Every structure is written in structure tokens, then in C-alpha cells.
Image (tube, rainbow, N blue to C red; front, side, top):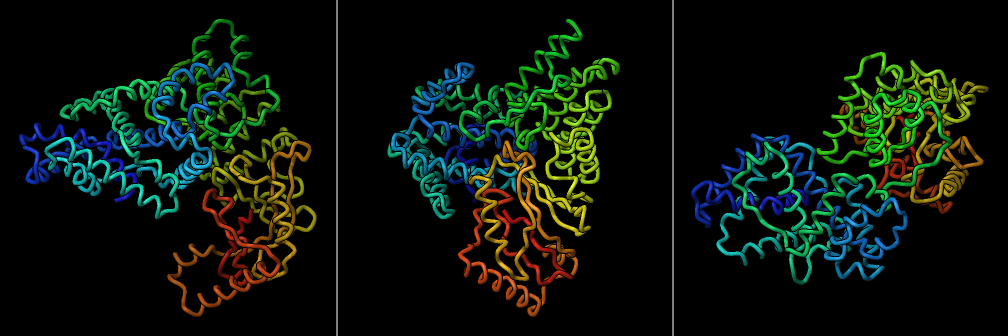
Length: 563
């Protein structure tokens, strides 16, 4: 069973205990199968809501561990007066749960590093949907609690499950995280938090409350209960701000404001009309750190849970209820609504509203910013044709401020691929007409200075080998501020390896040997110059091979992402 699966079983133990009287069973081996069948029915009948609530509970339990590991010293270092309300809500939780390891800086940092790396790789997250076929497995794990007859047996079962989670984390390369899961004595925080947050999901959702009304109400230890209540309020209403305080969301690059997109100025221009709606939207933007007019890469991850999602949808519905002529006269408000749509995972609606806002803007800078936002929405829904058109329109209107690479020198013809960190464009060099690949990337997820990356690319470019990608150019669009970095490489026409295999079947032994020989030769050449291949798996633009499969250009396209 996976780590999320084991933690899900721990979180659902009160349901197993409550299922015993609901099925007229007595604790023991004979109760396992009847309880399992009872739970399978309930899990599948409420599948979507049950899965969403369980995922949210598990994610929040890992967040609780992260907050506890940051400890009291972290809270004391938060000096911004605007964060006082959040700190006050967290204070009790941190004071009561701060583990011994958090007082030892080296071990604390190691555990936090493990936790953040595991989360980035989705190693701790439960799948978005539990299929009908998976429900019996989860129900079987939960039902096994029905065989225990006394609290000490239940406690030992909990600790055994947590020990298994720790062992799996050690095997996955996270020994420091494993070390903080199981305290020598007392209730493990991860288990307590998982049960508390799922209990909250049941008690606050009418459908779940009715479906799982048989669940036993298991109170958290008294000293932790109040702290968890404060943390739950922060995660419900200030989740984005907490991520900023924890250092998980980078400081947004401060850009000159665009008057035509400032909500307050637009609202003042309309007098008192819909002032309350403007204020609500402005408050929500602050809560989710969306106060910038231009979309940032992590905006699509701003809303974390069902409660926030519903609140955003309610505000969007209120805006939609306005007469069309009033919506047309409020492009700043419409731009904010489209940002919300990105934040809740609806890039198609966001793209539509960004275009709608652009149509009623006269200011070229504002219009360009909104088209750039539409470009980002197009990338997220992989509508690359529209995304490219939006980028070119934004550059036409205000290229100096919005161009993500030197579009005048490298003329884009199509977008090859994109993720939240980087985008690859197939371009034609203005003077030579040569086809090249231009990669733009966000600096927010790089763990090294961009200049260091560029220096490594220069070292790589010093190698002359047919299977190693050639770097033509790299730099910043805004060199003075070191913003909007880009890289230009050769273009190899053909299929990517996975595309080739999908179309033609597995490689023959001879083809595989030829490719392996090409890659090995490239690596040997790189190592001879002390250039080492690196793959840490943390971010898309840092885990691609530097040595490309360039020798099979008629069939294979190089994996070109080379940072």
C-alpha cells in the first residue's frame, strides 16, 4: 500500500470503530468482512465528495507537520504587522506540537527539506479520484481495525502503520522525514491531524455528515485540539498567505502598477455601485496572493481546497449576474475574475474572460498585460495556437514590458510544449532563417542563480559532439533587472522517443544499441571536460538530460530542455 493509502487508513479509523455498531458486529476477526462491505458501499456512494475531503485532510495533515517543524522561532521571525492575525491563530498549535527535533537546526532543516521534496514529487498526495476498483482495498485496510478489542491494541496498530510509512520513506530517500513521524511517546501528530481534518470535513459537509453519521467522534488530545482549530482556520481562509510565510511561494516580482487594471481606481470611477463586490474580490485577491495584474506561474495553484473553491465560484456567480453592459465597463474586475478562474483550475473560462476584458480596454499597457494573461491561460489548457497569437498581440502592444524572449530576433512559429515552469517555442532566426528552439522559464523554482545556469550552458556549449545539444544564445530580456531569462538551442526535426515508440512499437535491439552508444559517447565527452549530467527530479526544467539524442535526427527529436 502507498504512503497516502496508509495515511488514509489511519485517518479513517474512527469510521471503522463506528461501523461496528452500525453493522451489529462485535470487535474481532469475524467483523472484518461485514465492516469492509459496509464501508465499500459508503465509499463508492459518496465517491467524489469523499475522495476530495480525504485528499484535503491528508494534505492538511502534512501541512500541520510542516508548520510544527518550522517551530516557534519561525513564528517569532514573522515581523509583518499584516500577518499578526495569522500568527495568532498558529501560535497555540506551534507551541503545543513543536517536536524535539525542531529545536535542533540541522535535523529540523533536513526533515523540512525531505518533506518539501516529497511533496513536489507528489509522493505524499493521494490520487485525485479513488476508482470503484480501489475502494475495496481502502475499505479492507480500514476494516482491519474492527478486529481490535481494546485501546492499547488500536494504539499499537496505529504505531505499526506509521512505522511502515516511515520505512517506506527511508527507502524512498527521506530518512529525516521518517525520523520525525513517530515520537517516543504520545500521539503522533500526523495521525492526530489526519483524523481531525477528516472529522472537520464530515462535520461541515451535509452530504458527508449524513453518509457517515455512524462514524465515532474521536477527539484530539486536549492540548492539540485548540491548536488544530487555529491551524484549520488558517488553512481554510489564509492558505495562500501561509505558503508565503513558510517560504513555499516566492515573493512576487513587483512591477509598476497599471492604472487601468487597479480595482480601487476602477471602483472609484463608478462611485458606490457594486462597492461591496469590489471589496470582496479585493479581499480574496489578498488572501490568495493574487494582487498582481499579470498572472504568475503559481497562480494556478492558489486555491487549495473545496471550501475556497466554492467561495470563489460564489463571487464569480455574483459578477456574472451583473448586466452585460456593466461587466463591459469593468475590465479590471473582469481581469481579477479571470485570475480566480485560473486559480480554481478553469483556464478555458479564464482565457475567455481575459479576451473579453482586453476587448474593452483602450490603454495599450493594460491591454498587453491582459493578452499576456490570456497567453498563460492558453498554455495551461494546451491551446498552443491561441496562446501564441495572444503572446504576439501582447508583444505588439507593449513588447518592451511583456516579451518573454527577443521576439524581434527569434520569430516564433509555434509552441512546442509548456508546463508551469517553462515554455518551448519553435522560432525562425530573423537574419539566418535557421530554425531554433527558444526556451523561456520562470526563475521562481530554480534552486541556483540563473547566471550559474547560463555559465554551465556555456561550458556545455564548449563541447563539440554530434549528440550534444548546441546552445546558440542565452540571456535576459530585461538585463538590467535580470528578468525574463531565455535560452536558444538547435532544433532537431522528428519524433520524440516516446512518440516514436507509440507509433512504431518498441525499438529493435540494433536501434537501441545505436542510441545507447550515442548517449554514452556524449556523456563520455562531457565527463572528459568535467561537465556532469545531473537529474534531481524536482522541477521539470531541471531534470532533462543535457546530452541529447541528436544522432538519430531523422527519427528522434532531441530532448532539448537543457537547464
